[in-house]
Amino acid sequence: MSEQVFAELFSLGQCLPGPTSTQVSFAIGTVKKGVLGGLLSGALFQYPGAVVMTVVGAGAAKWLTNPPGWLAGIVMGLSAVGVAMVASATKGMLMKLCNTNVTAIIGTLAAAAAIYWSEPWLFPLCIVIGFIVTNITDRKMDKTLKGSDGGVESLGFGMLGGGVLVGLWMAVLIAVLVLARTLYKDGDGPLNWFEVFYRIGSIIYGGGQVVLPMLLSDVVKKDNDGNELPNTWVTEQQFYAGLGAVQAMPGPLFNFSAYLGCIMAIKFKYPFILGAVLAWFGLFAPGVMLMFGVLPYWKRFRTWQIYRRGLTGMNAVGVGLILASVFKMTVDVYNLAPHKYAALCIGLFAFTAVDELKIFEPIVVIGGALLGLLSWGAKMH
Image 1: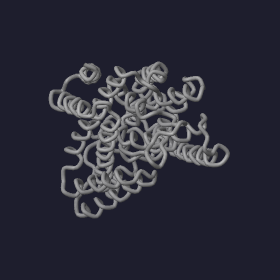
Image 2: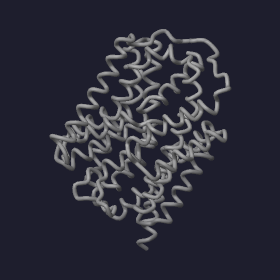
Image 3: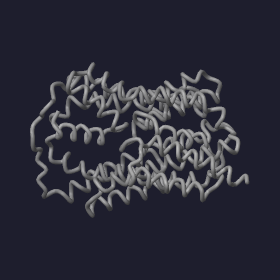
Image 4: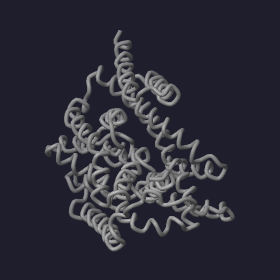
C-alpha cells in the first residue's frame, strides 16, 4: 500500500478507542484481503506476546505476592526499565506530534489534567477539546487530501455490517456496566474483571502507554490513605514487574492484560487461563470491533477538512496523556522501590540505552534486572 494510506490507517486508529498498533495490524490485512485477511494479520501480530505474558502471569503470581529481598531487587530493576522505555517512546512522539506552539500547549494541558484527575470521562473529553482547538487555530490552512488510494483493495464489512458491529460494541458495554454496578456490585469475580478491561478498552485513546494509569487505578485496590486493600486484585509490585516484562516481549503493550488476568484469577482461585482470556479479550475487543466497524466509512470522511484539521489536536492530546503516565509511574516506582536512588539510576541508564544508544530492548531489560539484583546484594553487604 502507499505510504499515505498507511499513515491514514494509523491516524484512524489514533481517533478510535483501543490499541492503535493492533487496530492498524487488523486494518492492513483488511484493506488487502478483506475481513479474513484482517483477522489473520491481527492475530499474527498479537498472539505471540499474549501467549508469553500468559505464561509469565501464571508462573509469577505467587512469587510476586510477597517477594524475597533478591526478587524485590529484580522487580525494582524491571519496573525502572519499563518506565524508562515508556519515557523514550513518549519523547519520540512529543518531538513528532507536539512540534508547534499550539500542539505543545494542548499536550501539556492534557498531561496536567490527567495527572490531577483519573476519571474515565476525562480522556475522551480532552480528545474532543483538542479536536476543536486545532479546527479553530488551523481554520485557514488547506489540509486537502493529496495522493491516491494506492493499495486499498477492500474495506472489509460493508456499511451495514460496520454499523451492526458498532452497535454490538455499545450494547456489550452497556450490559457489562449495568451488571457490574447492580447484580455484581463490589464483586471480585470474572464479570467484574471483564467489565473493567472492556470499559477501559472502550474509552482509552492513544495507545498502550495511556492505558497503564487507568489499569493501575482499577486493578490495584487502595483505601483513602493510599494503602493496598487485602482484596486488591493485583499488588503494585506485581503490576510493575509485569510492566517491565511486557516491554521486552513481542506484540502490543495491551498484552499486559493477559498477565494481569492470570494474577487475578489465581488470587481468587479461578483457572488462570480464564482470567487471561477475559482480561485480554476485554481490553482488545472494543478497539478491534470499532476498527472493523468504522473502516467501511473511512473512505468518505477521510477527505473532510474538519476531520483532517482536528486530527492534529487529537494526536497532541494522546501524547499528553502518555506524558502524564510517565510522571505518575515514575513516582510510583520510586515509592515502591526498596532502594529508591538505585531505582532512579537504573531508570536513567535504561533511558539512555534505549533512547540514545539504541540497544536491543530485551538486553536492556535483562541489564535492569541484573542491576536491581546487584543493588540488593550491595545493601546486604
